[in-house]
Amino acid sequence: MISLRRKIITGQVVGFILIAGVSVANELLTSKEISHAVTELAIALIVAVVTIYYTIKITNYLNYIISFVRICSYCNKIFTDNKWITVSVKLRKGLDQFTPTHGICTDCYIKERFK
Image (cartoon, rainbow, N blue to C red; front, side):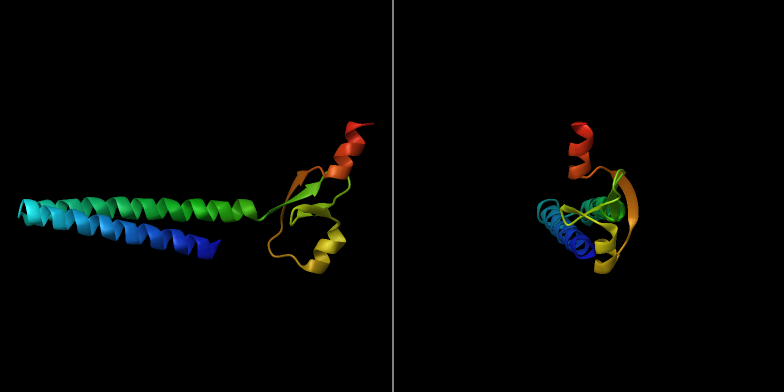
């Protein structure tokens, strides 16, 4: 997720630099007043900083949510890599970040649903 965050922020920075450059160039070519160009540049920079700040906050929250591991409330299997596996298999594979949350695996759902 960090490399994705870096790509997103890099894209935002490049975009804001282009917007600021075009805006300043337009002001200088049309009105010839530097104060208007500086004002537009300042506004673009403020918007860029706020946008990048919230992008970082959102990606931090997504990293937190992604770290959750669903555990079946009935049989304690763990949902990972789009399948339900036992805890022992998960432990053998290793734990990166392990923040448990509860759910119900497909097998237990079928058992409980059709009792």
